[in-house]
Image (cartoon, rainbow over all chains, first blue to last red):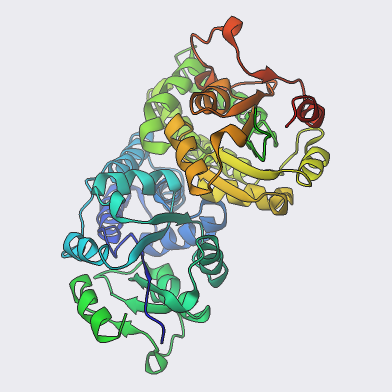
Length: 234
Length: 234
């Protein structure tokens, strides 16, 4: 196998905490609408609404906020007061303005690897939100290239690698989502390392993925990555 | 002067109609909240709210929709019913799903210029929204590179040109906003052609711009661009 020259990282829940912020916000949302709601399955209704809106809203906090507003109106049959809707908008703003917390070991590991490899960031989400978040991490200068993409499918990875003239067989992707960070990269002939996060958004779970046929590595934490690369000849 | 090798176009209100969609939606919004509103200055309040939210929401339809919701709650002192808020969310969805209308002459002009120059698209807004819109125009293949950026300042243009190895003195930007498409490009040593649109968002108007010291060309329509380029040696 050729040596790895370029390592790309997913952002949310790989380098920075993200899903926990959604989970915390969702809990606040459930508490907020509970007094007005007839339906007990607010959780499922929110997820359904998010998935139904994905083709229009894409990924990100603003779309999530609009989906919470719609769900609040829907599950309360319009009884939710305007004041509560304003609180939902405020929750969205707080998420956008939330301090960025790096996962443990991220800074040291990236600084180490930046000395030996070209590092990329490949992330979904709102361009504006993600650029703002990256700026707040202070890690921006460690990355050779940053790509905010609207979908992480094999075509997207192929386009990104072509654009930066990175051969797929010298490319390693690191991320927490089997569906978005691992399988599409393997499909185009790249390598991938899975680092699970404590929580995964229901929609990001790869359905029907056969655990026994995994041809990618799972690590427990990003700090194990340099040793893995040395061991694998990368 | 060196010949122009690369021509970049702004997207919204330069190639496709956009601001008219915002204006039409705003009119619907004013009609919707009028029965519940005390304040007569809903227009000013919405603009203030949009500008206040810009640092968190960036540019785009989802942020605009959230700003409409906040303004509706604010100017009605919470009296706006949930049903009307749902209608505001629907307005946002309709904007996101709206058929894309090219400005007159865009298709012919781009097809002509693509034979002689490298064409770029440089646009602000939500990445997901703009990619989706570009796909719907059918013009995607005419562009050498597409850049969705979160701000159009001199640093952004410099970074984009560096990234694609385009010398500033071979670069021409074409757009409808003096503030975003013209002045920052002149500042980094590029050339710029201004093609005004019928409407400009109040926040995009370049304040204090001295019309008498213009060192850029204004054309009435994109179809005049090839003749201008021939005349100027571009």
